[in-house]
Image 1: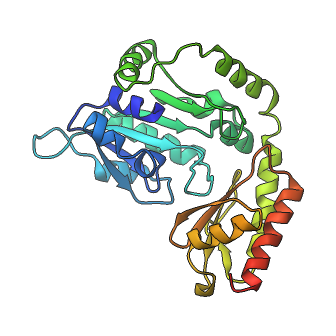
Image 2: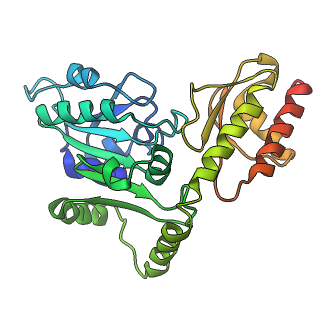
Image 3: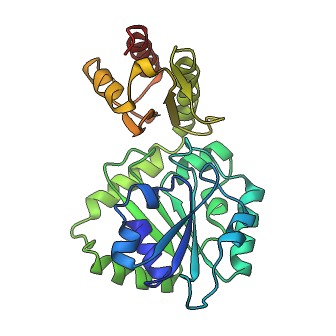
Length: 285
């Protein structure tokens, strides 16, 4: 909901927002941008990251013939990109072009903490230059629930109204806030362990016949695996077979699935996950 609140604050019905390929706002929020806000999402080419040139090429002025571009959404780290991080210079160029064109900027920072730890840059530095940012306490930090959206005072004032309209008001939320604060105080420092485990897991999976790592690098805690041997079947089918062996993962495409490390997944669990996958591959799925 946090991303959709930001979209509705920054853009009006009939406007356009630019997003990266595989964007969470496009794939996994049930078409909410158009259903709730009447906003058209246009996908920019890339691995989830995109260039300033792509923003400029897609930009549409308000000519009454096309949806005027109002907003650029950046996802860092990028979920379906395999937890990839934005480079400092590439992001700065995107921001500069958006400002030149008069566009608002929103950061989908659901995994902002992972991006900060992996890049060695502070959260404040990663969100600099954006008009709004959404974060999630229940991803790498491990809180039971807790998505937040932040921005200027005026943005937050309007965001409260949009949240109310979408039925997102909460009561007695202090216990959830306490869990989020505990996660920030106690779980942020250990995120590098998740990143090391993901790199280890990717290395083990890459050795399994019929499977390949779908991204060029493992920047954070997400490993996207591609099934390259048809004998292993579709990702959803492999997921079902793995479940019976004690390994849980979700399909993210016909022949791709996602493995995520977090505070409940240690090195031994990564080793066991690779063993299960190797066993399934050895039996032809």
